[in-house]
Image (cartoon, rainbow, N blue to C red; front, side, top):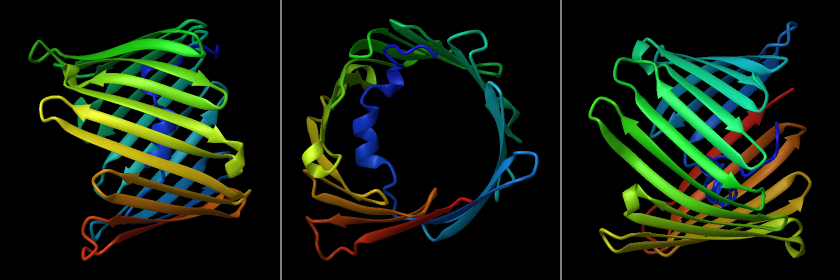
Length: 276
């Protein structure tokens, strides 16, 4: 695939992942294995809000893509087919969740040296159509996205933004919610923090005059251990410890605290991923 400005969904993704990825207040364990034919099977068991749930995912990779089949404890079957470079510089995704036959979705992504386009449509009688486009370079890109509901004949959303990327930093500004909110983020990698990073994100909703400022950081203790923390202006504090027990097997412990109300019980999460 050619390297270009990336998709609009990638704007601010690096900063967003540092502030949200792997933070959890639930308990989850997943175990992966491989069959002789090369099919990867992952079984997961989780407790969310005191209620247990689980799923089994089988993934078969072939030359230019993969086929995933997921079965959960609610008897839902999600099938996802992804194909890369067919044709060149294009990625195609098709998904269907049974027994909901109206959940089918087809998405096509075209990545060029100076542009990226994504189009997705629901496979039903009144589909929603999602479109996004970006232009620019790997350093600076401008983009927009929209969603059109054919059932109502209205645009459900339209967002626009700009992203600036350098080897040691990433910044983005996104105008979203039909112009009702704006979000800006900045991430900087710091060698002084042993390949760690600092991030700040500020968002404002104009209709309610609500502002949210979130700051976070990550620190690589060693090649197997990562620490992360985040705090926003509403007093929500999050912390995370991630340790690689052995290659590809990861233990994650995270917690959430309300610093404005210390009498409120903190929440803790645990995730264990075991791979051969």
